[in-house]
Every structure is written in C-alpha cells, then in structure tokens.
Amino acid sequence: MSLPTELKYTRDHEWIATDGNLSTIGVTAHAADALGDVVYLDLPAVGTTTKDGEACGEIESTKSVSDLFAPADGEVVEINEAVVADPGLVNSDPFGAGWLFRMRITGNPDLLNATGYTALIEGA
Image (tube, rainbow, N blue to C red; front, side, top):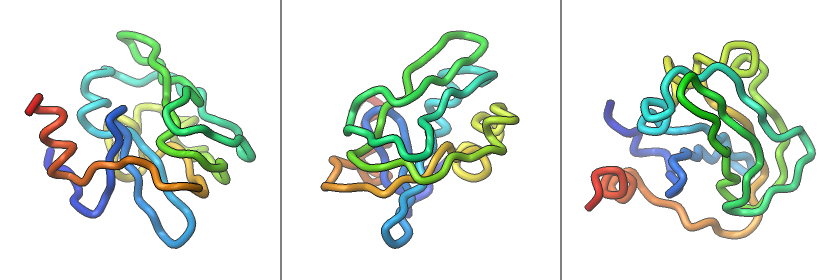
C-alpha cells in the first residue's frame, strides 16, 4: 500500500491529518500489518491531555498488546466510536474509517513526511 502523501507520520507508526486546529490520528498500514488482527482498542478519553511520545492507550491484536503513543502534546477532543465497536477497521481501512481519535495539537511535534516515513520503515 502506498502512503498518502498529504499526511504526516510519527516514528511510532501513527499518521496525522491536520484540518485547521484539529488533527485526526490513526496507525499506519505498516503498523496494522505488524500488529495482526486488531481485536480491542483502549483509546484516550475525550478531554485527556497528552504529552508527545507518552503512552495514551493500547491496541490489542491476536499477536500482542501494544501501547498507543501520543503523537504530540495536546488535548483529545473526539474518539472514533465506530473503530471502538469494530477494531478490525484498523486493519481493513487504516487511513480512512480506521482512524482512532482527534485532538488539538499544541507545540510543534517532530513529524515525518511520506518519504521520511518510507525510509524509516525500510530501514534506510
């Protein structure tokens, strides 16, 4: 799967789409493939203040339980109830219906563009 070039990416395999002062957060297809079938999500509650790089939730798959890391400092303003009800959306549509939460980002997180993220996952 090719990476959407309009998104930004973290080194923890999350994507960020920014629209005005809101950012939508999800995990990349690379992360979804590595996790295996996602069966449960523990997402941060609305109103949660996040710190860049700190654990803010969990993703449970048939293979393991992994921490979900905050991609930036900010405040969670919405969670995707559809993905909570059907965690498999993370695998079937990671860059669309499988988004996890929306937040207002404060500060300037260290993000990668699609080329930089591709280099990261290819070990360049």
